Image (tube, rainbow, N blue to C red; front, side, top):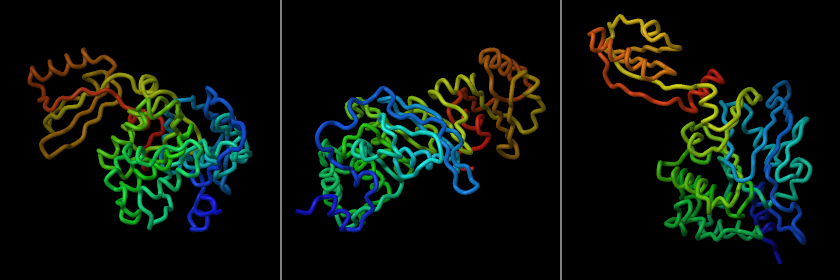
Amino acid sequence: MVSMRDLISAMGYHTVGLAEAQVPAGPDPVGAQPAVAIRLDRLRKTYGDLEALTGATFEARRGEIFGILGPNGAGKTTLIEILEGLRRPESGTATVLGVDVPKHLDLIRDRIGIAMQKMALPSLLTVHEVLRLYAGLYPRSEHPDQLMAWVGLEGKRRTRIHHLSGGQLQRLTVALALVGNPQILFLDEPTSELDPQGRRAVWDILLDPQKRKDRTVVLTTHQMEEAQQLCDRVAILDHGHILAMGSPAELIHQYCPGQVIRFTTQAHAPTDFQECFLLGPVERHALSPTRDTVTLRTDALEPAMEVLMAARLGGQYSVEDLRVERMTLEDVFLHVTGRRMRD
């Protein structure tokens, strides 16, 4: 009898990760899930003269959503691919569920789920057929109907893969990563092509305690709002180095405390805001030939607002479109790396 795995191989489709899952025979080869789900210790990887990772070290705990942030070329993909068993490091160790991944991936292959940005799928099969096909590879699989409901593809049950839009394909990729009910979930830019409704559906899956089931999620994303909303902790990676790590709130407090005051004023307003407020960086940019926008940061909001309002009431300059905002994870990223995500 032809096995499901042999069938997929015969069809000529790439089967790394999800499709290579094996049903373990006998006792559980890994045992109870440890408190530390993922551990990297002084991981180093080079490509010729390029050092993609230079001593990366961190731990991801059971049940947490751990974000890896960094500009293009920072080393994110290399790090994730080592954890997934797709690449081997020159030195250092990478363990997942207590298993040395480069050496013994076979012990945990059916315990991890992977959602890549691009996956080769059988184009003539329907959404339901693909989910059912992959579900047959796992001993603890989720039901295809449940997966379609989670990612909002119930209406595409009989739609062939080649008729799906980019966003629908991305939602299907997330469903396929979840099909084996994994203990570790790797998501590479899982919402990059999704509309707000699709993005919210993925967020709900990741945040819902019933769907998570103590699952550890390792997430890469270019969307800083997404990382701030979803991640328990993040690591900011650049040039192969981990520059900062902690919860979004901890990093904001450490690197970018205080608030941001934004307003517009006359282009000819002579006030030196830097001197007026005795603050750190104050930015002033031309918004139009007659209007400027001013952005200033302060650790003492009330005194700064008093100075601002007094100058306004005294006729020194106008203050319009006034907004007070907290610093964000994007501000931390810019502070730590000195550049934007897509530089």
